[in-house]
Length: 233
Image 1 (cartoon, one colour):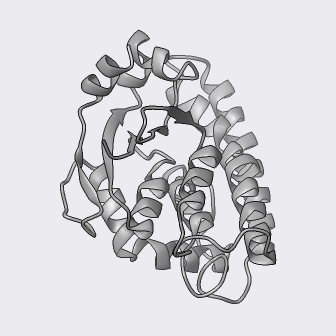
Image 2 (image 1 turned 180 degrees about the vertical axis):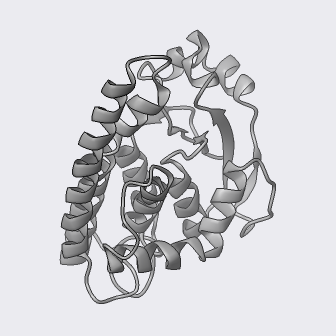
């Protein structure tokens, strides 16, 4: 069977990996996971004990978790270098640097926002403190990324790569949490706008919303989460 990406909704960081698989252009399948309910079941936790998405099922049935590991899997099979660069080159090193930063500090800066949002009940003042703390973290990481972005239309030149895919899945969170003032980071804003207009990203977000656009043709269908959990019980 074709490799299958388990991607989360709503607003999962894994949306960018769906776009990356579209850019890659090789056959794959998807499985949609409700992060507010399905991800917390005992059956899902047996698949990924961390209770997170994304999860990737390879052609031979191996389970791969963590965004950077899945990005590495995609890179290793990108023989035409559609979303990556030749190993050992300065461009490949730069891409890995950006992916590492985005997947750690940039993504992690939003965590207090999500904690406050998902906290049932709780002290309103504590939630406000969490959001205030998160706002400082998010803006600091945005400022660092703004410094890292060059003059090209994408993070690494004139075409989107895995770094852009990892970025766009998370970049939407700034607007959702109202964490960033409009106009504060013009390079980041321009990059988000450009990526959101990309057909692969539009396809990935539509799938996240539960729509069924055709995409590039590389995606061969959705696999029910229950079926994947049954196979890996």
